[in-house]
Length: 353
Figure: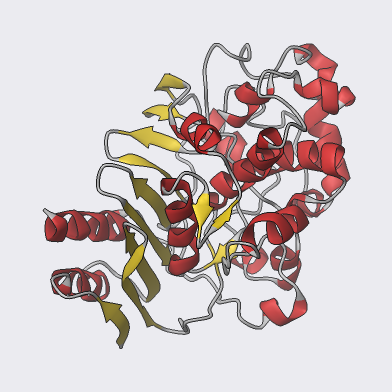
């Protein structure tokens, strides 16, 4: 059953959401859209999806991780042009002394994979993963190319936050962004939040080339495609801020509405308009060496002619279109492709045309 509200004139968006279930294999999802600061769509449906459900959205988490660093940049605690090693001295190993914060945030640092295999359990040891990343050599010369730091982006951002602020990224996010902006989005679930978490369903296909950079980037340690891992309490309680944020569509859409408003939401300013512009302007356009698509990476977000945002493995999406004043999000528990979020985006744009 589909429940929720749509503003007058957007009834076709509800129809599109229903077709995600009838035609595109959806089993449980939420979709929200905020237009010029006003919620115009808030829909949910399917197995186990309630208003307060928390769903693992994979890489949709990455802009939230970047936002934490950018809050500190805005406060003057560090600069985008600083060497990462200025704040994290061990990071200077293996040819990374000159890697800047800007390069790290825009996926240019080259730390997309660990060369030596590690067990799933390593992913739950923050200090160990950061130690390994500090010692790892880049897969390309930093600043010359980009590729999504699929599994470790959150550790790179989070260790910077920890070294400068003292708090973990999940705690910083909760206290400095999620609570001030009333976002029901969590990185590291508490016991009461675990009770609201919804299991992911479906099977995510393995990489075709198990020796390629993509397979290395998402499969070591092996965790992302293992439903027994990502549906477990240990995963949900951990802070793995590249890929294990939990939330719902309204929370993700509200985050992007705050960015669209220049860093202010409901009268609470967290970022300056200038830092939001820098985040979303785009740093480099070219082939992503991990995913092999041509993209423009900003600071934590993908940028294109329709705006900026980030999708996640399995089909979730958060997006903002400044031209339309539209912030939207699709959050799913059913691991498939992005046909559903693309259909909802197309429906919103058609309804607003």
